[in-house]
Image (cartoon, rainbow, N blue to C red; front, top):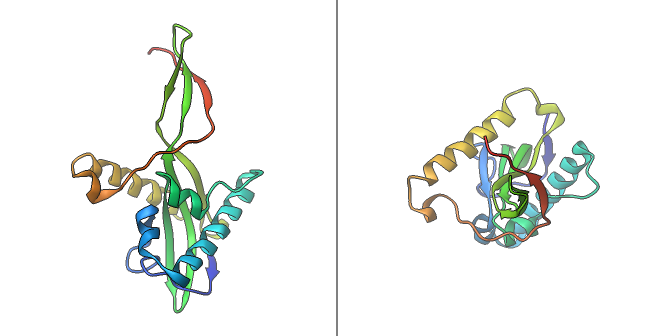
Length: 167
């Protein structure tokens, strides 16, 4: 059984199990709904960090509100409770790559920043469904006006270095 929260947030866990939580979604919430989402995201971040053995939480309400990061959250409702099954966080990440000529080049690709499926929900296709929805949104975005699908901001994050080689 997924983890259970004793509240319902409009737009999460309704008819569609996957909700896109980004800055736009957060701006539509107010008062107790926003506080409840903060509680949900804090819990998600802690569970994800613990499951991955991370020393720090990488998903919280501030990152979703102030960056291009977006969380595809898989949840359902049971009466006045929200059942959270898992989520997939996507966003841009500043990376530095070493090209064949040994020059350092900066790129900012879209990356998976966090991924978590509750232990009781694993091996049931939830992770696959989260990734499939993300791919579908990406494909739709390439064929529709930008604002109809997903709004992007800018992310300033720690950098990593990778070596790129020509095929």
